Image (tube, rainbow, N blue to C red):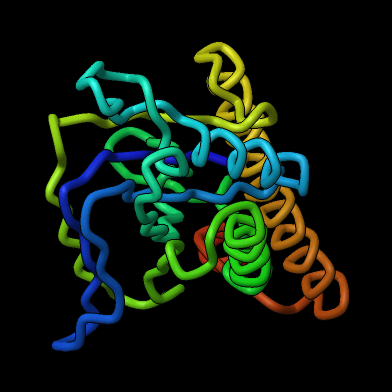
Length: 207
C-alpha cells in the first residue's frame, strides 16, 4: 500500500457540484491499494498515519506532534493511480487491487482508523467517483509512505515490471499459436479450402 500524506490547513472533496467531505487543519491522505496488501499493511499504515509527527507543539517546535496529539482531522481519499507503473509513457495499473476487492478493503481500513482515533475526525471521499480534491498544503509538507510489503526498491520494481512484460508476451504468443492451430485444423478438415497467395500460385500452375 502506498500513501501520500499532506499536512493541510484545509481540504475537501467535491463530486459534481456537491461537496461531500471537508476538514480544517489536519492531514489529507491519498491511498493506493495494491493486489499484495493484507491486514498487516492496514495495521501498519493506520499506525503510521496517526503517529506521524508533522505538527508543531505548544512551544512552536516543529515535527513534535501527531494529528492525534493535536486532536486534528484526517481526510482519506482512495487513489488507485498511486499503484501506477509506466510502460514507456503510458500508465499501467495492473498492481492496483481491482475495485470489487479494493472497496471493502478500503472501508475496513477507514473503520480501523476510526477505532484507533476519534470516528468523527476521520473523513472520506467517495470511492470510485470522479472527485475534485481541493488541498491547501501547509508548508508545503508532503510525505510518501509505503507499507512493508510494497515494492519500494527500484530493482524490485524493475524486476516486477519485467515479469509482467514476460507474462503479457506469453499470453500473446499463446494466442497466436492457438490461432495458427485453429487455422491448421480447418485446413485438415477441408483440404480444398484455399487461402492467401499460396493457393493462387498453385492455381496458376495447373493446366
